[in-house]
Image 1 (spheres, rainbow, N blue to C red):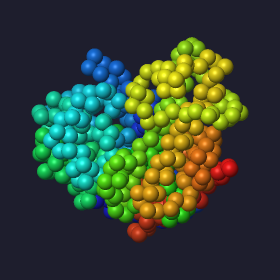
Image 2 (tube, helix red, strand yellow):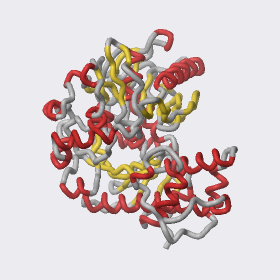
Image 3 (cartoon, helix red, strand yellow):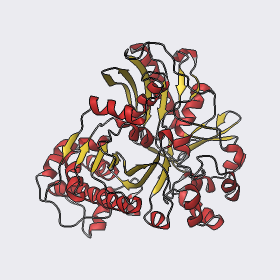
Image 4 (cartoon, rainbow, N blue to C red):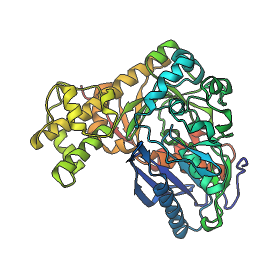
Length: 477
């Protein structure tokens, strides 16, 4: 494991290539990123499904299937672009795999498995949440890693615990590390120092020995095997939101962002954490960002509500429901008079989403003719949750927001973008859609010396803005 020295494999300005492994909660991709003076582009070489799989003991991730897809995707990327210089991996946060005798102990649990609730009481009995928040700065989410650890009897005999991107990096390089942005979501990282809080781990019964050495985005973790070109594996913002925020083309010092996919991560980029009682009460989190920035945000349930609803309808119909047609029909109906709480705990688990939303609305799930209005209610409810969170961020950070950048898959949903502008009263700039993969690519490219030694995050974002001009949605009265 070593710090990444800029490698002059090609002159600055020449088009150079890296590979980005981007694992989301519903799908994964392997992308080739190409970077040059007037070039910033992505080529998808592999896309594969992902999601919870139910076993006898609960919901898990099929990590072996993901690993096969990642290896095959990287091999295909190298076949298409032999000049690839490095690999970076990002994924969702909080979930982990335990290693013993060099092997994975069991399939990693999925964060939506209900075992996580068992750990909450144990953790808060040892360290009250008020104290936790001052130390780790994290909003309360019952699936944060420290709660999962408290419910995991195998932790005590494990040699190491690796978050998902670090687990794949270990398979590629043999090195066991914890990339800092993702480590910040465990609840065991000191929000002020960015280092493991050994005293907190001890108080919670987490063996310090399972916490790997920390690395920063831009450091080289190790090298992939020769059949994958022996490529350097470079740490990026391995929490997918950390990578996505790198690629937010911030157009104002007073901009907010929404990274919208399965979740909507709504917040601000700050230089220092906010761990006030008011921030804790509002359930805002302080997570690590690239270059030591703080992602001050709140998790809002995002397109999960819509995708689960469409999945349920598709299963009922015996044929896929066309999301584009559904949203077009939803846009043509009047804005609903009644919404539901997008963050209601009853909506967290997989299952019959239309019935659970209908129960919150006090009615029955709609028939086919009522689906457009139901979809409109879902979209408007998500947008209202976004708007409420933006207003809270303004108040807590004492910063007036003047524009909202919405990136990720949600940027393709024009109905959601417009509803967010209308309900927040702020202009929404949508795009890029592939913000996470772009952030992954840009951090690797900077580490490889593509932009010169002193390229800042703002320099990287200027490249994004030039290559992917966002679409503006102005608030309607």
